[in-house]
Amino acid sequence: MENQAPLETLNEIRSIMEKSTRFISLSGLSGVAAGVSALLGTTAAFIYLKLDFLDNHYYDLAFDDRGNLNFDFVSFFVLTASAVLICALGFGLFFTHRKARKTGQAIWSSASKRMLWHLAVPLVSGGVFCMLLFYHGLIGLIAPTTLVFYGLALINAGKFTLHDIEYLGIVEVVLGLISMYFIGYGLLFWAFGFGVLHIIYGTLMYFKYEK
Image (cartoon, rainbow, N blue to C red; front, top):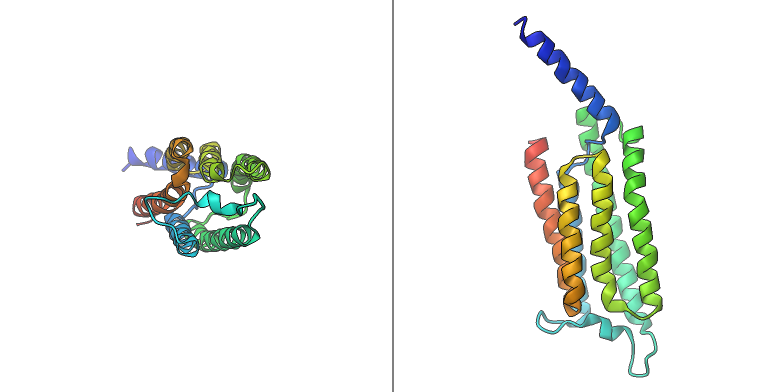
């Protein structure tokens, strides 16, 4: 018992230091919810655009025969992307807040602020880059680009939260680069990256840290 006391003290100190430097209240269920939202959004896109899995050059529908921008196409994607983002963020905040209460960690702390800052820089940069791609009519490159910048954001934020998120980020970057080559299948890669991978990652994290 005497030998165990110093070890328990060290574990408590390590736990306190980890909570002060890392935001460890990210819930695996947040990832699952984000993945489901992404898959529903992609399914809506396939149905709306009447695409199939063998020929889905969806970006060709962004312009009409005269080369003018199809505002119905743009409006649909803006509304769908906004709905997916709101659902993912809403469920993410709910599950993360619930886990934070269980672990006794404040959801808004110096650790979470650092994580959000390092997450936001690549995401905002990627968002601006995607708008420039849209401005120049390079619609087919937008989906792969979102995967690459999102992966970079996860890798960057991984220094201030669970290390496992960095592995997800690496896979997202690789997937995005592969998608750059197979441009016509951007929606499928997007669905796999933001949908399937999030569900797999979230499930693994839930059973690893929350069960």
